[in-house]
Amino acid sequence: MKSAYLLGAIVLLSACQPPTASKSIEEVERKDIKTLSVTGVGEVEVMPDQFVLSGAVIKQKSTAKGAMNDLADVVNAIQAAAKADSTLKDSEFNFASVNTTGVKDPACLLFNQEADRTNSTLREGERRVTKKVCKDISQQASISFNFVGGPPELAGSLLSSFSEAGAIRLTLDGYKIKNLEEIELKAGEKAIANAREKAERLAAAGGAKIVGVVDLNSYEPTYNQDTARAPRIATSGAGESAQLVDGGEPVEVTDMNLDVGMQVISAAIRLEFIYE
Image 1: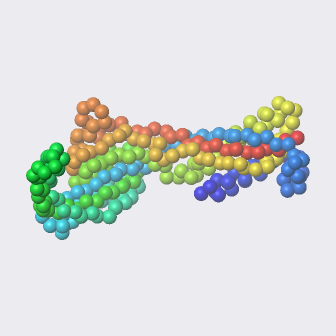
Image 2: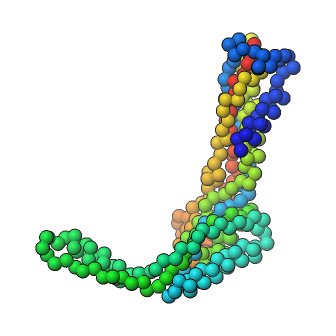
């Protein structure tokens, strides 16, 4: 990815060379040239075009097969909810592996915890409480998933739909920008122009002028997709789409302001210019 940025930078820098620069960098000894190092910064504002949801499905049944079947029904319902939304332009699920485990009798587990607590207070030689062997009372199947969709304004309705379909622990994790690399390159080009402008001002202040570029010393896009955070909204149980709370009283998720707003994509670049 970085090679694409550097290629774009080199192309732009080549276009910036003045026609009076007759000698190439290779023809000039490093010790014979005068240089100055300048850092340029460029910024581009853009609106995210995707949202990211995460959640889980957990089902219990007397048998592992029954729990798996119930889990599959909910997963199918979640996928169907996404397909049913005709306004959804982007839709991508990523499901983790299904986990199955036995569910122990909670009363037995509580007894063993109390037994451990009591035994820890006994003196040497005192009769200890015998712990029970806790048996499985049911089987549990679980799976977690991530969903990337767009446009961002549909985040609330999809979160509600998934909750009503049976998903739990749903969280609106944030927003994404699809063509981020392209936008970062634009920010990099602006950073180059900014560095060039600074270098020309510095050179002019000393009665000199910029005649070339020695090297592209560093380039760094400073945007992170995780910075496009949404309000921290989450459900704890299936069907709780009407009980989402982001501080204060419960409110319908579709009534909440989920607009992330414009994001600033920035880049910093350090260039070494030749002046004479």
